[in-house]
Length: 152
Image 1: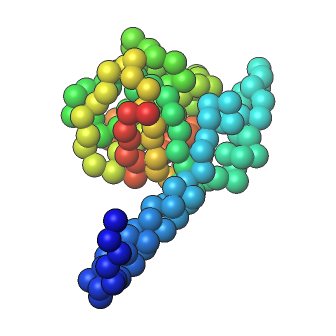
Image 2: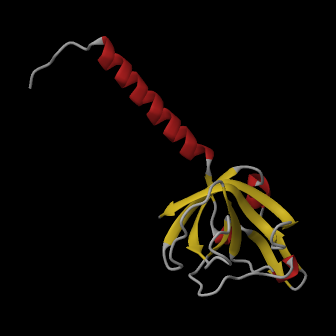
């Protein structure tokens, strides 16, 4: 193997590679992993209370793994992330009926939906608290917004 002197171009490419690697590490470090078990501190007859982790991560970037429930319509810009694969969308009429193992995902841009049995990873900003989508009437307690996803 022959050793050659480092050129200015080689130094620039090496520097750019190091900067890109640092940015990618920073991007992944900026997102906190969240699981379905992390969502609620307690679930009882009086309702559900968010966990301290969820309260701390409100407004922050998070990642979650789960399954995409079948969307309500093909052109929807949102879907429901579920803990287990589902055959039907768990659409809820009110936050009082909200299941403890789903999170609404609002995409940053339209993407092709995955099969309901494919494990995906979602990244985006966590929003906490009851909210009604003005376009669909969908009521949610937890949302990941400006989101993107990929197969896990």
